[in-house]
Amino acid sequence: MTIVQTALDERPAALEAIDIVKSFDGVHALRGVTFDVRPGEIHALLGENGAGKSTLIKVVTGLYAPDSGRIRRGGEDHQFSSVRDARRAGVVALYQELSVVPTISVAENILLGEHMPTRAGVVDGRALVKTAKAQLERLHQKIPTRKLGMDLSPVQQTMVSLARALAADARVLILDEPTASLTDTEIRDMFEVLRSLRDEGVAIVYVSHRLEEVFELCDRLTIMRNGQTIITKDVADTNIDEVISTMVGRAPESLYPDRGTATTDVVLDVANLDGRRVKDVSFTAYAGEVLGIGGLAGSGRSELLRILAGAQRHRGGVITIGGETLPARPAVGRVLDAGIALVPEERRSQGVMLGASIQDNIALANIASVSRGGLVSGGQIAKIAKRGMADLQIKARSTRQPVGELSGGNQQKVVLAKMLARRPKVLLMDEPTRGIDVGTKAEIYRLIRELAAGGTAVIAVSSELPELIGMSDRILIMHEGAVSGVVPAEGADDELLLSYAYGRSERS
View 1 (cartoon, rainbow, N blue to C red):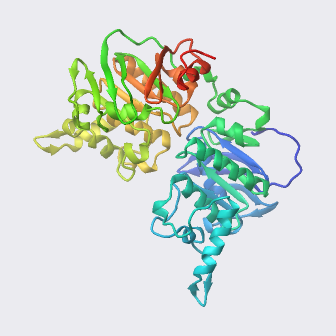
View 2: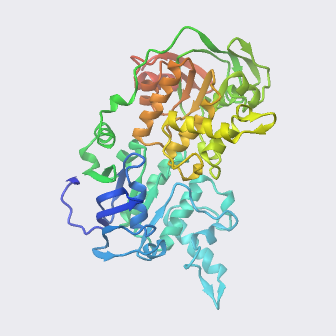
View 3: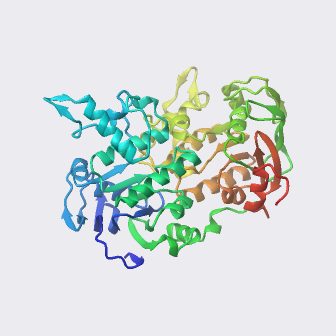
C-alpha cells in the first residue's frame, strides 16, 4: 500500500499508473504499483536494482502490457500497445544507453522517424535543419546540425535525444540515469535545461541513484521496494538518510561493515611516481587495508590507478609489489601476473564485453587457469564462473546470460568476479559504486571488506566523501596530481577531506 505524504495539488496528472501488476514466469515484478507525475514537475523515481522501476517504465511506455491496472494520460485512460503508441500520446523515455545513430547528422537524429519533413516524397533538407535548430534552441544548445552522431560528446548525445523527444511533442519525459557519463559542469548545464522544460509544463520522471541530484533538482519523489510503491513525498519534506532507510529498509550507517582488518605487512610501495598529471606520489598499502583515494576531478586519482595497473606509462618513480620491483614500462599482463588488478570506472566500455556471457567475460581474464595444454577447458570456465556468481551473489539466469542484460550492479560484480578469480594481492577500484543503487552499494562494501579480511590490499577511488570515510581504513587525498594529505578514516569528516582536496593542509 502506498503512503502518500505530499502537499495538496489540484492539477490533473500528466501521467498516472494505477494499481499496476506485472509478472514474468509467475514472479511478480510489480505488485499494485501506483505512481503519478504532474505537468511542470520533476518527480524522482527511486529504489534499489530489482525494486521494479525499469518494469514500471516499460509498462507506461508501451513496451510491456500490464497484467492488470490502468494507465491514464492527461486524465484519460490509455492502453499503449507499443512504444510508438506511447510516443504519439506524448510519453517518451530516454535511457542511459542513448540511441543516437552514429552515422547520420544531428538534424537527422532529431527528426528521425515519422517526423522527418518531406516535400514530394523527398526529405526537405532546409526544413529539416530549421526544425532541428528550433528544438536545440529550445534547449539553449548550439550543436552544429550537420555534425555526425559519432562525433558528439556524452552531454551532446543527451541533448540531441532530448531534442528528438521534444520534436515528437513529448509532454512526459522519463529520464533513466541521464547524468551517468557527464561531468559536474555538464550536469549543472543539464539541470538548467530540465528546469526550463519544467517551466514549460513538461512532466519529467527522473530516475537516478545519485540522491544529491534528486534533492537539488526534483519536486517530489517516489520510492519503490520489492515491486511496490512505498512512499511518495515532497522532496522538501524529507532528507537523504530517510530516503536511504526507506529504500533499503535499514539505517544508512549500517551500509558500511566494521573496520579492523588492516595489518602492518606492506603489500604495495610506491615511491616518487610521476605521470602526465601525477607528480611525485609516494605511499604504501598494507595487507588487509582499504585505502581510499579522494580529490577533485582532474586531481590525478584515476591516472594513478591506471599507472599502477600498467594501463598507462609513468615517467619516473618505483612501484614495488610484494617485494618485487616492477619494470619501468610494464604491460598490463605483467602487472596482473605480479598481483595488481584494476576494476575500471567505465565498466561498460572497459570492464566487460556486454554481448558476451558472464562465463566468457570471467574466462577471458583468466585464460591460464582455464587452459590445459593450450586448450581451453569448458568445465573449468563453468566452475570459476559459478563460483564467482555464488561468492558475489550475481543475480542472473545462468552463467551463459549476456552481461548486457544484467543490472548495473550485477555488471559491476561480473567485473569484480573476473579480477577476483586471479586472487590479486592488490585490487584497484575506480569509483566502485558509481551508478549502483544503495542496496547493491552495501553489498560491494561488504565484498571489499571481505577481500581485505583475506589479506588483499584494496585501493579505491571515490568522488563521494561519505563513501570514502565509511569504507576506508585510511584516506589519501590528491590535489593537482600530488598527495596533499593522508588521514585515518575513523574520525575524518567532509570538511577535513575537502580542505586537503583544495590543497590546504589545515581546515580554514
